[in-house]
Length: 460
Image (tube, rainbow, N blue to C red):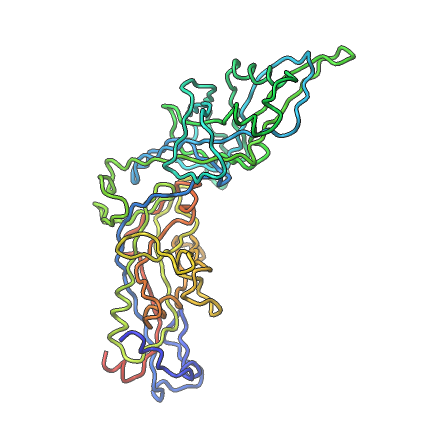
């Protein structure tokens, strides 16, 4: 009987209050034996499956991913990056200017990988785009653009590491510099010097000549590297020199701009040999061979969680009011610093199709933030469940845990019919990491604290 909890009088709140930490606390100076209501606690393990989704946007996220990382649990993930290069200021190079070098500089801002891989030599390859990529195109992790067959630059590097708190960490405040092919650099420089060449009259003309760059991992690449495109330290630099009127040699440079450039990442995933290996259609739910629950940003592996158990339980109780409902995913095993769970999860409504559902206004429907001022049927205030670490007792608990009382109450009352949700890494809506999460299915818990009439309690 969904909806029966609505019949409880509001005055119940004045008679009884259940602490979320201790459901046995029932008010001050009130004799529980004389009350008509009783407080209860129930915990559910929610069934979960895996779903492989696609259509993950990766364009214009401010970061591109490059590399190859072989995760023993999730398989091999490979990333390639595509980006335009824009003009910055007007160009005025003296006639006696002489080309020195053309350098691509990229600001490091993210790493996925294991500590032992940081000291390995990584081989990065640079190619030239041969087709336009533009701001009116939506780019996904499956998108690819045509590039030249000729390699226009390369870099062999190791990560700069620092010792902090007894751990080795990657110094993200660094840049990678790639020397581009001299022939290409000379060609661009000669055009820059030619006052009759229209290539640099506008950014449109320039992009018609130089569509952009492609970054790919070489055979020796053991991590996934994130480069921050929207950063003044990410640019293409033309170095040259000339002799001034006093006969002095002047070293100069022109910076091409990456900050406004259209960019995206192509991300492919091969889970062969893992518990999630095998070929299956997209949006088909399945179970891993080890029964664990897998999620990964960038590759489209999400978890489908079923709230049916709490609905079925509520149907056995007359006159039930929910005080608190807490959803917890975890505890999570300890993770290395650069192979970590997603910072946040978001819970989209779904059905047997395993697609995310929209409301009549076109908004994707999600579990909403648990706030009395927010309507549980809204789609404008998505709950983003944050990854938390609680080491106050020195027993480290890593999990996602949030109140979803309004959502569960709406389910029980029949106000919301959507009892299936897809747990997405928040970044999965715009791929900027391959952060991943492994869960024991028994760790997906819903705890409820609720109040019933004593007659209902006696009949349970």
